[in-house]
Image (tube, rainbow, N blue to C red; front, side):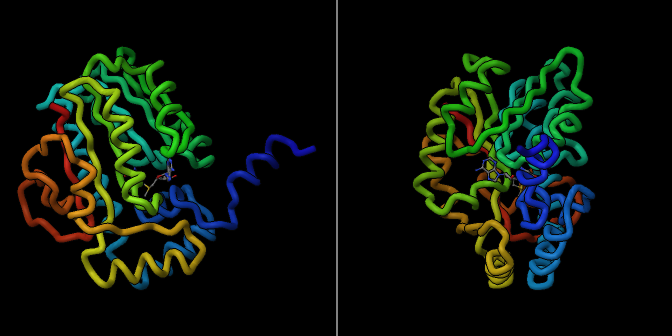
Length: 265
Ligand SMILES: C[S@@+](CC[C@H](N)C(=O)[O-])C[C@H]1O[C@@H](n2cnc3c(N)ncnc32)[C@H](O)[C@@H]1O
């Protein structure tokens, strides 16, 4: 018989690089193991911009959530593939605009589950923040569980931030997104960013990731990502490098990652 600790440790698989922990490492976090750091370093040797991508993606998330809450009036967020807690999580940004905002986080990594308590810390008294351990290949379960915290008769922002590359089939991604969005009220939004195959270096980095035993990540073209937004109205400036999406004043750096916000009519 295994003890709960042994059970958790076998689920965490500290010897195998995990997506959430490697992302945490590239973001400058401490919630990662030696195997995550070794694979993270091997990828960064070939594609040093990966750490920048991690940081820029968080800034993109912050700008997008602030836009959705403050300008589009969104008070409900379904953040799929949340990752480990980091600075300025979705609920903190949303609830700084609307203290009564409701957020549901979803991830399938046991390490994220371990940290869910920290992830949920700091929620406002008026708001709701919940965590659903689930795989995005099972959108029906996600919708059922999320409905315990979110009201689908009101607009929701459905977020897939740097997570679609774990699914090799683009058609399957469109299916998952369509299943989720079809349940959402008009005025709901889809937010997505993903790494793109827009330089030979990033493609070589993804190859190194797979060689090192990391979960392979499929980099797509911006045109392929655009197809996920079919039927939605893209919010200005459309699908662009994440650093160019409504940037703060100052220099905009280029990066192999595109993102967009689409509104359900
Ligand atoms: C690159 S990290 C991005 C984290 C966060 N969204 C962000 O932008 O900082 C990818 C996350 O997706 C999660 N993930 C990967 N495959 C998943 C799946 N099939 N279902 C749910 N979450 C998944 C991983 O556990 C990890 O936390």
